[in-house]
Image (cartoon, rainbow over all chains, first blue to last red; front, side, top):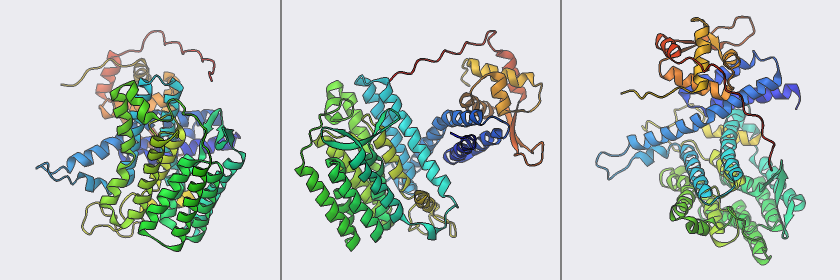
Length: 393
Length: 103
């Protein structure tokens, strides 16, 4: 890495930290960045910045969780029968999503530890959660004010991601006739688990012809890999979207998704179950009933953002429905076959993929309820637009 | 009743570094070097000390033109008392050697 590059990375890390930290602590992120100017050596500056990020990130996550819990508790009706807390949190679907991701990963780590998983597995899942949080911050930071809305072309981004899936099918690591992985730094990454959920949520927002073309390429890539679970995710999300928006582009994506899924069903899947990754919904109960409950609870948490969004955010039900359908199908695949148990099982790809798909959830409903204290202020651009723009970078 | 908890060796070293300044404002990188702690340890501790009223923090204008403003820290009266009551260990703990990378 060149000297200038290290310095730039250090500054980016500080900016991300400032975005992720709760408002009352943001000046501490700025304080770290200000110190970089006093460190002549770029390598030292980078380590100083990264060390600060690692040290303050748990505090940032904790503060966000506490904020979500307080918002929920503060709005519980005194009578205890009618909870307005969820309605309040529906204004922050991303906050719910992040809280659910942290909860699911934590429950998964407990179950993995109880099952005797190697410490490296636990470390990798925890690191993936931190990386996912950083990516949300990066999307927010990079997108903020740098791209004009006219420059945003979701189809181009989606096509690039679809081609990455195709490249995985053609050039990726092979095992038992399947090519779903990429070797990266000694780790085996599954690009489809990272990219497909975020692609589906992005398509639910855009639904233009180029985006639909990208999803067709993705369906072909998943059929080639072949990956029954991910092809099923595409088909399920396409079907969910078609129920609400049966436009030409959506129906094309649904048809491609169903065709891709049919191809994967027709092709043999010879991969055996991998310990601590696949079939956890069954094996965890054999370890201990509490481990099983942790896995089941963590898995169900993944659907909470979609359920809350569908119930309380009428204007953006498409996005919440696709998000829910995508992750429900991933859970179903894990229950029915030898496919990764998302988030709670070992595997950083699903954790990063879940966090990225959360990043595209709206920060607040588009149709702001008149008079609501949580409604976005007039003249202020919706904050989730920044994320969409960030994705375009 | 306030909970009393033994301070970590890192916290004691940071307090000692701030106390040695004799009431002068100190900066993050300088503190990390003097106290021999990593930035990931330093900032969470500084935040905690400030929240508990042992530390003052303020933004100071740049000393030279073209440099950024810097965040500076010094102990409050209760912080000075805390630092005096919790001196650092005499011999700083040896850093553990690097373990060979395992795959």
